[in-house]
Length: 309
Image (cartoon, rainbow, N blue to C red; front, side):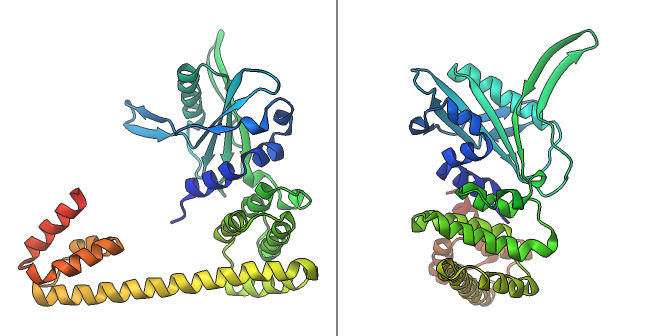
């Protein structure tokens, strides 16, 4: 499963000013870029719905040339959700109440479907009286076309092109263009890896597309092509390492389950699933515990204790 919130939060927090400059250039006229301070995530509990929500990204920023501050609240929404505007308003109200700063709310809608424009306001009104009209900025990636960002020397544009409108036949070219743009930015290795990993996560290609992608890379100007190939090679090496790691872990689990069957009997499917969910360190603990186990009940009790600790 892709951890969308983590990926987007890492991208936007690393390139926060670049994100604002790309999508909200007018804001750059009045904020002090060097003043950005990220605040701890806020946790909100909706008692009536039994839900718990956390803000994705909250930054405190100073007005340019002034001693006053405001907050920028950014939410990434990876799935379409009914009444999302109401949740944004609740965030706004609670943040405004707690900090007593103006709050600038922004939503990045990163889902693929639906394609219809997402709402950008929440209202409360009666037939004779409008009580509330709350607006928030919307950046809906599936409403943006990747070609419109080809000339943007911006790391956020380079990454998010992978989530914009892309015709199926263009996927290999978009991936190659993302890498071409990335190497022109001349970022440090850690930031290059962040963006290249983001692109590779959201533009997984089929074997046929990989062939087309290789041809696209071959058309990149020689000065950039070598660096692009270094990124592609690192993807391949990481994929091999991950495959070997998965194979090694599966081998360890098969051996462990076979030993358990001989010592205490065959675990039920539910217990086997719990064992497969153990971390590497926990698997080592269970392996060390094997000689002293005498029954399946004792195994289940040990797992209970482990999960409770």
